[in-house]
Image (cartoon, rainbow, N blue to C red; front, side, top):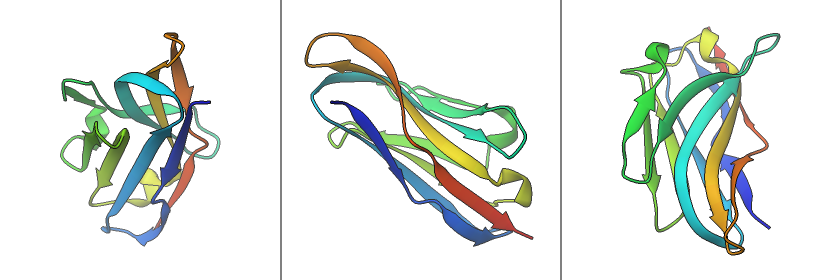
Length: 120
């Protein structure tokens, strides 16, 4: 069974940094796009950043220059380095990935989310 397991969330002061990790586990043949979304209380889930298997990245405009997405293909893990965090970055951060399981089927998977809270 394929799963995405996030870690690295927590409480940080304004201006601080956090690094989120998301590891894909299970019977995996291949992983294409990996990414992060976030959802603040009372708001819709929004795109943060993504990275393809060829390391091509895409960022939401508001995250450019502050957030950096990267991946370790050998460890099937995607990272999100978040710097200069502000209270408005407070949200649950979700990892997502397009994964081909050993059965050959491609599917989009989501993690359970990790809370990031930025205090002012």
